[in-house]
Image (cartoon, rainbow, N blue to C red):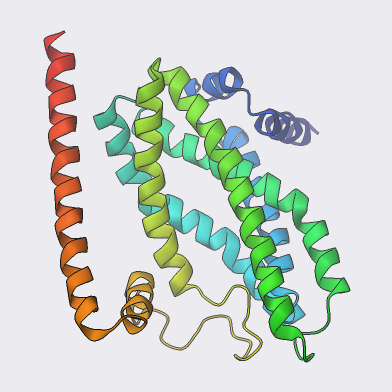
Length: 271
């Protein structure tokens, strides 16, 4: 009974996303009772939504994605935990390694609650759609893909807005909160995109067989496949020119950001 009450109160606090309440939670030593609601929210919310993603292709594909969605979240969190902790300390977020990991866990839990609550709508849309073998399947595939992309983007924006307010409360500075969140988002997107590539398929292309993983899931990368598609759509001479310019711009931006960060740290130390 106590566990159920603790679960309900924690999920209610997450749904409200009040930064003061979440800050108090981060300041307490973590326990299984405080962390289990976050894990339950991620597993149940992402599993329900994952099932709605793969259901249109086939119920078996829905089951596969229901397993892979929580796995994707936890793997991204595990891989990026150390990096986010170091970036948080470097950018002055005021969060320790443990608090950074727990804050990101809270953010993913909020995301999972949102997509999980919208999964009945997604399932109803799939049940009303024609089967994946119907002649108009390609049109519905694009529609369903766009719908899920919109839902994921909406849930991600809300969850990261709550995380931003939490960082700002801890750091006491609006710009520090934004810098920390942007750095965390860059790492999460970089890692999450690659892991989603390794764990594909999710939506289930009607022209491809139903599989838990594609053959050779660790062969190639998300960025390699995107780059190959971009290069293939360009004339030969333009492809090499674009590649050179992207390398130059990337190096320039990286050097500029490093120098700006060093200048800001020296200025704050002098003050």
